[in-house]
Length: 56
Image (cartoon, rainbow, N blue to C red; front, side):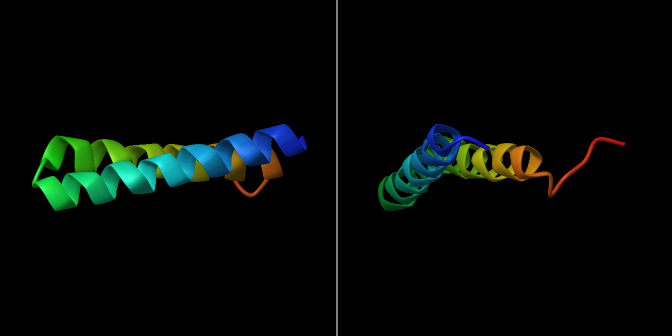
């Protein structure tokens, strides 16, 4: 996995965490879920790239 990919996943994960926090703070459930989805997507992409998850 390239260093740029890891950095990109990290940024996406942190932006997702910020969205989730903002959603919790403002009571915006849609923003909160979007942030959670962003974090999950970043974790899954990183896992696939590192070989932790294999297609079946």
